[in-house]
Image (cartoon, rainbow, N blue to C red; front, side):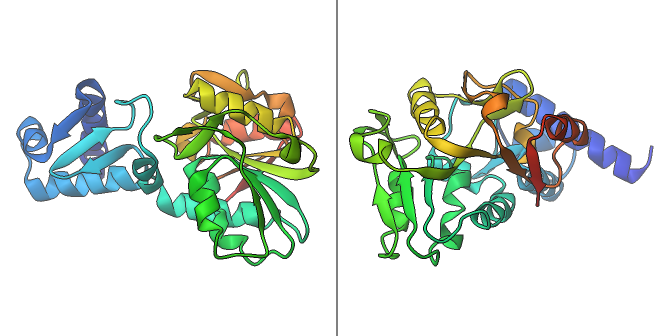
Length: 256
């Protein structure tokens, strides 16, 4: 067995045991695989960069061990991919547009790239997004009413108010926990899903934003069925078979 094969096998086994345990320390993994701390830390860093686990102080956490992680934790995952996805999404925004941003960390990644778009209007339930746009006074921001969800730093409960429903929305950007041909775009929290559905219904174009790890996965509820999706922006590791199937259904797929 070659060195690269042994490395790949050990890292896959690390993922397997981590999914069973939920969380493990570096020391426990060293004992389990009979390798040094340096080796395990290198393994965990590599797997973390692929978005397959979350690094913690002294160990790692399975990405499947919690129903929904905090905004800050999710923002750390696949940060480079999210930045590229955000930049690609921003290229679809034009002067004078009205757009919707949901409260996902991937939609948040769009913000640095749209701050110079003239006469832009942003409807969002993300308090984080609204705060991030305060230094762009030429951008109008509309927030719906509702209660605060701390996990996503968002407003839920009152999907859209009279002002936002009167606006013509050119394009909406939505993160997701899963994408399949059968269920479309899905997410975990039902209150968040209700907000996303209302936002989707207001958009002329619906664009899903998700890294390759979300393809082929299904979360609790659908907020955008496949026939409501116009485009998906993802990273270059997205599964070729599913990409082709979406394209056959006239859904634009942008890989970055």
